[in-house]
Length: 269
Image 1 (spheres, one colour):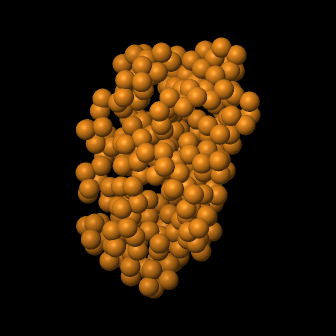
Image 2 (tube, rainbow, N blue to C red):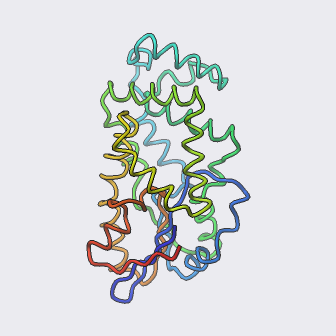
Image 3 (cartoon, rainbow, N blue to C red):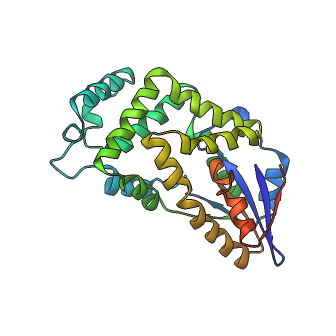
């Protein structure tokens, strides 16, 4: 999905990304690369090439303090399920025991994607950043690794355990990959209806994962992102903004929020 947002002669292109990819995804559509070529800067949720802020945020928000460990925060059943899943991924328990449940769940989801051929190194943000670097364009972040991880760390112990439990179950029955595949296929085929269906179903899913995705990862962040895009429109002649695909869909998606704020929003595809 690619949008053109205009304000008093300034333009921001808004492009939906996915965080993993395949070599077959490239080159991107000429409309996308043409828009990026015309932009003075690239703006991403995070500059994915810079690992130091990620590691600092992981230490601050994703790890337990010295003397604490994940087994002290899980029920016996959930701990047993975690150990079983780790064995399936050939990960020693000791490698993750100081990690909080939410980061363990996200780590395993990422490894599941890798097992199915999808790599972060082939993700859309990595491609866009490399493209911008070749053209000597500035790369700016909308958020920070510290902020994003603080959102997950804001979950209570109970919610974190439920988040882990739900994701372990979906990893076990293959549902996690099926969900990811629906989103990846929707991106690859520019299938707006499939994306709308994903967002529309979130309130109907009575799970900690769906509630966190809807209320925190989307509904909280979208207005904040919209305000930052507003600042770009006021200060930069042309910018290219790449954010996670789900931020672009639904009534509370970025295009609709910006339209409601009085900006000219045009969907290019």
